Length: 402
Image (cartoon, rainbow, N blue to C red; front, side, top):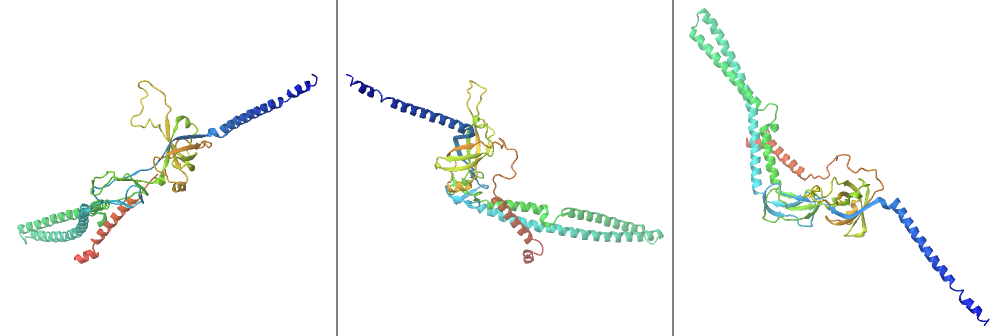
């Protein structure tokens, strides 16, 4: 019996090490959880809370509508949906028959007006010479009347002859007055002008400019670089000014319209950096951007039928405000182009709050511009100058007609 007691003691001494290891693992897990909570809390207060993100953000951009400025019939379509076009490329051509006839008429009218105005300058010189001749006639008539008056005093001539001399003087003076008035009238028509600046010539030039522009505008060109979209024009279609034919979308000028909740705008400022991810490329492509502007109203305030919160039962709904985000690296758009309407996920860094919530200065230059139409006007002015020069004295055209 005494020999079995030590064996029982040995069997009860093995379990305690297992309990000690389980407690150690539990304590280790507790420490890890506490460190994770402390780390997450430190990250949130030091960095994590200074970001705002939303997936209610979409690519937006200019959709430049191509519309005719003159009526006409479509004879050529130069680009279709998806084609790349550059500013000045021909998109649509209209039949020019009517505009070319009007242009020829305006050219002839300007040439005729220039020659008529030259005649007005000649009339001034002729009226001035006539005034000089009338003055000589008045002086002669006055001298004859003076001599006959002296002779009538001595009885050498009759009173009737003196009366005839006086009538001749009166007629000469009246003719001089009429000639002077005609000279002033002719002079007023050309005072302080040259042929090119004469009002009649300017009016004819304006008509030619309009006819030239109408003829030139039968060729509809792209105002900007971009891609063609929404083509609706067809060959043979009779179109009116302002009718939408197609659109040109400059994809290198796109931006993001991100709709943030009003509670997310507290620390948001213009100029803050933005990280952009798109659904089309996934998280592997990240664009860099910056906050360009914060909307001046909520989306519902500018909707076609805004909410009428003062009527009926009212339920508070958190509103969203559009925030415009511009891309800061154009090369990223060249490498990974975006289309209008694509979904994006944006994250705004709020660390730098030195910017303002609203713009403080008005723009100093146009946001977007094109010069393709200014070139058209310059071409019209060049044609007008050529016609005026060709119908001036001494030009080859006037010499050949003489």
